[in-house]
Image (cartoon, rainbow, N blue to C red; front, side):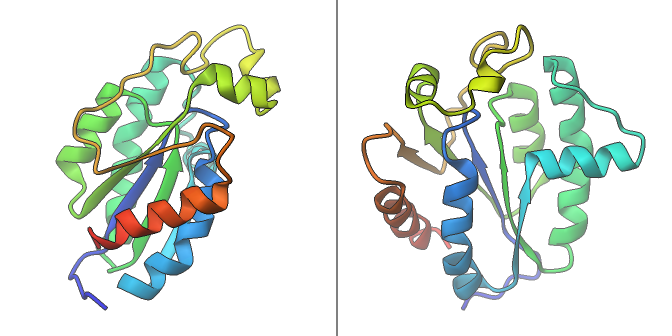
Length: 175
């Protein structure tokens, strides 16, 4: 097992309904076995943490961008304790990506490549995609960074278990 003085942050990002949470949970035991104590944090959980401290960020592009600063600061507090993090969130935001790349050491970005139309067709997240505003990939243009560390495709035809195995193999080469 590799020992870092600071934890590793794995950001799993993609559209709502892409499989981020399921894949994050499936790689968690592997990551923990490979590099030590690892916690899972969901973007919605972070939103609740920030709300508790009167950081009432909404879902607009501006709010999503501004929250990225608070998020990286909290992530770094945890990482400084040599605790690894798997943080899944939509993350298709240029400002957030740049802030996290610049300010989080030991960062691994994992992109779950999925088309919004496939998510809707598969019947995932209907409630979200029926909203009238502030949905990434519908009302808010998504930003796909060029410096992705790992990319896996979820076409909803390949079982998530198989995608998870592919992800673990790719991740093992980096950890």
